[in-house]
Image (tube, rainbow, N blue to C red):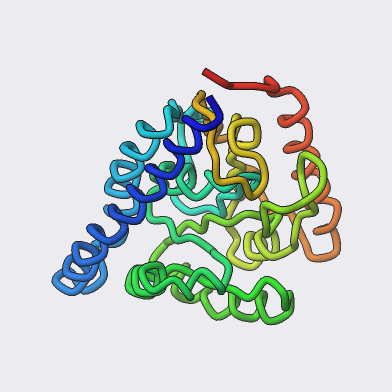
Amino acid sequence: MRALYAIRSGLAIALFVVLMLVMYPIVILANLFTLGHATNPMTQYVLPWFMAPCFWVLGIRFKREFHETTLPKQAIYIFNHNATIDLLTIFALGIPRSRYVAKWEIQYIPVFFLLGRVTGQIFIKRQNSKQAVQHLHKQYKRILKQRLSIVIAPEGTRKHEGLVGPFKKGPFRMAIDLGIPIVPVFFEGNRDLNPGDALVVTPGTIRAHIMPAIDTSNWSTSTLPKHIEDVRNLYIGWEESSPQKSVA
């Protein structure tokens, strides 16, 4: 069965690349004709639709579960990052008016560089925390003016020990500076079906739990470490209480 899963995973990777190549001219032309306004509906509707064939090839059932009926119009969406397949599940979320924060190195892939630049995604150098924070600060005016939501992994990388890696300050400092809430997204199943930096995915069910928003209006930089610890503990609790396997 492992060989079959490897073949399916290879086909899904090839399909993902083809879909990105197909999407590239569509995104470029749509943003040129709409002066950049096409990004929001594409992020919310087109990207999830493009991810569906990849899930089908992998044998993944992707489900979104909302734990709050009304989401904030603008927020920092954070998620647990512990699998390669996170790339697909993030795109499949379809968060309205959202932009993604990704590592700087992903721009070395021409398709991602062009798509990211045209659609206004945010690339940061994770190795230099001070520089990363400064770059995020430069995005504040645009984020507030366009009422954008930001999607970011507080762990920064999927390669970490334990169920949940250390959280970086960036996403939480952004929430304070911008005066917007944090919405935790917990991916259940990613780690079990595709652990760490593995490329082979086991068929099964992945659930994206969109949790209630966390109010940050009374947060301050002096109490930030405690708030980060509290939010990280939520993720640890969700990981420990989730089923160990969501395999088909």
